[in-house]
Image (cartoon, rainbow, N blue to C red; front, side):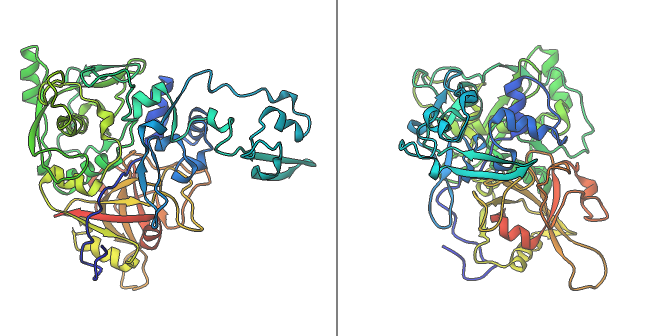
Length: 488
């Protein structure tokens, strides 16, 4: 139900499935090599590995592998829903072998190789979609898009077709041959005590949580928002605790209290104890999932993600063959894929979640909501916002700055200048859970998006690491975001 007044919260949705896999972390895990997240050439590497044009990776309507396990629900307004496990398909290397097109001399030859390229077996190319057509040096160059139901399309990674590696690394679906008592370890990885090789960082430095190779931006954005606006709510492993555990040749542990708010991704209120073992890639030594922007010098982001996975899995681990809640030191972290960022902030703080959807509110209404939870241009209560699962009419999600079905931390607001000019542009300050803003030169920029945020633009800039922080003009925010919320 929509509120009658703009400043009144809307009814909480029955369910939200917010999240897109971080393509940078996913590609690193697949190829076993470090990639430069903020370099323009990395976009081509991502496109090649994930088998999708870069500009089509970030909108659910294109069914890219970043949304593995999700689909559009077809309702109005459109939302995301989980795919049933029976509709998820695992591709083998043989499945992904493409036909030999070297025999194609004329267009009609295509139908002899791929009879259903246009969606039927009538050997008619007339229904085949043309993605691009242009003249170059006297030649007409065409790029065709096979029908999604064609045999050729079924050889490509998508939201419902993944390799075994991606399935076990980034989706919550498990093999029918596995049992609840099976210990979970992601492919090409091992559980490592990251406190052992800890390099202590400046305790006054704000270390942002960075999402890993999993579609749980709802949780990572919530963690960042709580740490930003309510840092006293975050429990840390302190130096003395880590050193004391090391002297006893034990693994340091952290106790985290999480609060029940009902619905999915929830469990009874309890204090979860987790040790410092997290999945690490065997090839690179890098963390696979949530990590700190300060590297291995900060533990809490990884441990909170692990605690959340352990907590929400506890309600389904009642059988005697399954380790109890505080015995399972290696929980399946992929079970945190897709969720509700507004509820997550409440689960972390025991505050009340309030939802405000953009559909029936103006840009001024939304700015007023943000300002009412700020002091000196900074949020003083945890706030998150989430985008539409697919772009509104005549708009596009074309790059990694604004991503469909993604949760972002709301850090504050600002204006485009100083003085008494009432026509100043108003901006919301957001933080991307991938911890990166897209480099220039990819042709995917948005009007009204400011990627260089310093203290001259926003007074809170010196209090947070700049990676992933950007300003978005409120009119653009209203177009691309489906809602925002606060825990209070």
